[in-house]
Amino acid sequence: MKLTANRIAGILRQEGYKLTPQRHAVLKALAASSDYLTPEAIRGKACIHSPGIGLITVYRTLGLLSELNLVCRVHAPDGCRGYMMRRPTEHHHHVVCSNCSKVVDFKRCELSDLEQKLLDETGFDINGHLLEFYGLCPECRVA
Amino acid sequence: MKLTANRIAGILRQEGYKLTPQRHAVLKALAASSDYLTPEAIRGKACIHSPGIGLITVYRTLGLLSELNLVCRVHAPDGCRGYMMRRPTEHHHHVVCSNCSKVVDFKRCELSDLEQKLLDETGFDINGHLLEFYGLCPECRVA
DNA sequence: TTGCATGCAAAGTTTTTGCATTAAG
DNA sequence: CTTAATGCAAAAACTTTGCATGCAA
Image 1 (tube, helix red, strand yellow):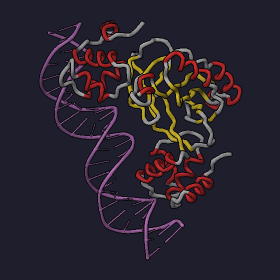
Image 2 (tube, rainbow over the protein chains, first blue to last red; image 1 turned 90 degrees about the horizontal axis):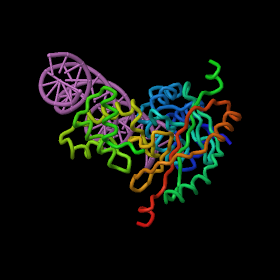
Image 3 (tube, chains in turn brown, cyan, yellow, red; image 1 turned 90 degrees about the vertical axis):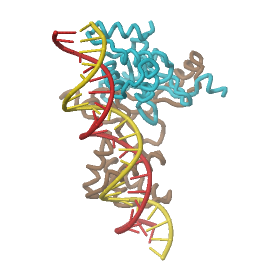
Image 4 (spheres, chains in turn cyan, red, purple, orange; image 1 turned 135 degrees about the vertical axis):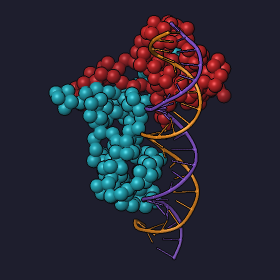
């Protein structure tokens, strides 16, 4: 159940937001790319469909999409400025290529045992986690 | 084997770096706090031992400590500006209190099975991961 | 037509850089 | 003494805000 640009566009409309060419361009940019994008990179790609789109609009659109949980941040060791379309609506994590920044999702993280252990050991009542893997994607391994 | 301010000071000297009062103040600030600190917060705490220390110096010291792998970044869902002294020298992860920002470390992450599975499923050659847990620490749970 | 969205400009944040001065070793 | 570190100022990078105009619904 992939979230395409059009599907998200529908969600936006349902939620009462206007579907401007700029927003659509941002959606297309996010949907079309398999790696994570910084706001600036999104603007670059969005320019294809909406020339001259402002970085400001990209930031505002990302804010909107974040609120609606349609986009998620990618945390890389050296910075956390990347964004991806949140493709599966369920809980998931990222596998990020350290060479080309491609991102693949996975769902089964099997951390509940660990969370229970942490509660026992530290007394923390765990309510969330961040898990990302880094490595080389198949293409970058051979190259 | 906790990394105290003095222990790190020794490492700095060994590596040929000068041990200035400012650097020592940053080390003390980091060593003394159990929660993660932003550069600005570090500057605030460091002022106790080195009044008037510049934010710039804090940044430069953090850069130095990062290179030597003596501090590590804390990734929170809403931003990644926090730093902690890297207390265990081994591989470890963070449990972060979402209320008071206290950080506790843990070591056993048991992700190698998962990494193998990911290799099979995605073809990614995993060489690292980021894992942080969020929740309420014992004190914040009762409050 | 109406109100939300855009984009400019401008300001607010965060982080880095250049350079003269200072101080550690 | 010598070299590296500090701190100011200034700039660069990143993000948010105010306001007039424009456009989706």
